[in-house]
Length: 234
Picture 1 (cartoon, rainbow, N blue to C red):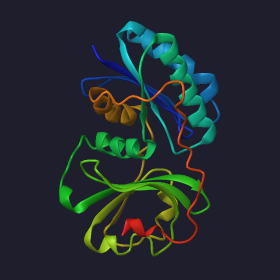
Picture 2: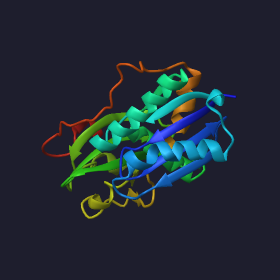
Picture 3: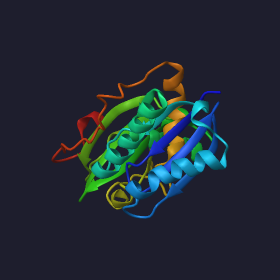
Picture 4: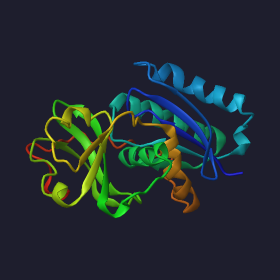
């Protein structure tokens, strides 16, 4: 049946989804602070029970690998690895920032108007004016890899002359007053979700791109880039 169980815990939102053949079968989420360790396993058990899905029906477990909250990622990965050990299932690790871009596409039903002139820029709040970010085109091809950066008024300036960039995520709000180009589009309410993780995990599953359950660790991205936005963004 190739049902995937997806877990997203990189931010305050704790999210679990069941996914099959390009469709979210079920999704449960909580944005209550500091509940990941208490709620995650319970959410998984309840989601499986409510949808009459047994462990034998799960083909793989997918988890958001980071960057993001150290504690949140550690809890999500630990639970995912525990399920893979207990159920003898493969583990799929999904880049958190790219999953956020996938979530944007899911939110707009994969609408691709003017796709050649649009870039997607998910932003995760790091600290002060720092964000975890990357750039993707509308087909989710990577334009600039995930990195930590300090955003200022010159960030993305040259790129925005020729391209529209859609900024979203909990790090984008603090950039609105700094990035003022008419080609900068800020979209609210695009939150990390297990649905975006599952969206990307399906292709990785089809390509047999699994990680080693014993040795896999989250990608915390603790190092920060001091100064202006990375030149790789231009």
